[in-house]
Image (tube, rainbow, N blue to C red; front, side, top):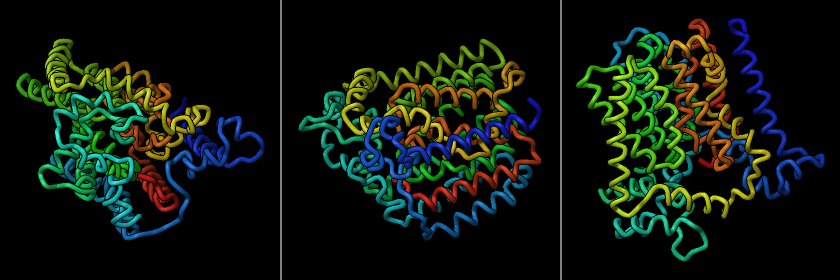
Length: 451
């Protein structure tokens, strides 16, 4: 396929997919009910703006002007700044910009609804925190309380994740930082730090030039809409730094490699106790190991990281929680709830439409470039990472355990796709950056997202 044609085809198909996902639930031609296996009323009660989890509501807020200015500044000056600033400043500026961009987008919905109260909703973690008076007991009984319709069943989000997620907010409360605002700040800062982690990984695997070209895209990615207001932003940040440390380990000197691999093991080990789905981060991890300059470097990195990851699992096991037991119980809980009203006949493909919305069309064009056999055969780091993230998303989709809300649930995988536009011709970067920014602003102002 000629240069440019591949991207055009990918973007066209993505637009058609998104349009279909938005239109199909609103058809009243006798096709909706058999297609989605539910009454239209029941379907819309849980997906008013499907495939995005939210409701149609054109609105502006305190964050509108800052968000527009940040996006405009990123388009006008982001690529040139990323090209000429000293390297240590680039990931730091990307992180700062990402945090400001995410917070501004959240503030479009106002301080309370847009930020401070998001993690205090009825089924969220913070509602469960006051009930945790004995952490060891909570861990010992965690798996037993996952299945619903028991007197002591966990709330929805607590039950759907390993105990690390709940423990994070319990510990935050214990040190005097309780409440939605502090929890939101944690998710915002850790989630937005994924921008810096991605650049560190790309630089280690593909060189500084490509990392600099990716910087503006990861700084103002549409994924920021959900990073500031959901615990999944926090999960994504932890996993991103785990992969970044793994990348540093495979390409660093022996001393640096051991320290970085240990950090990677701890972070990725912790990540799978935040979100069961992050077990699929094994795919990006394998992509990183493939980029190692030698088999010895790959084995050394894997050995050190695996030991530390197993150590994290061992601590939880000794404390009374076995990950496998929790995962099996979660599958049962999943089908006890809203999943029955989210038919896979629709969400199996609409999930991918929500992914397109979350990463932007510029990222879709970049992803098309990543599937280049010569680059993959040459073990190009960014190409391999993007392909691995796409495979992780497809595996999550095929599991049938992710139906709707994937714009936040899959953040751990999607943040890597936001770096894909760096693979596009440099002369087109500002154009694709503008497309992503505009898409994020329109989505955030036309839909009142639940997260």
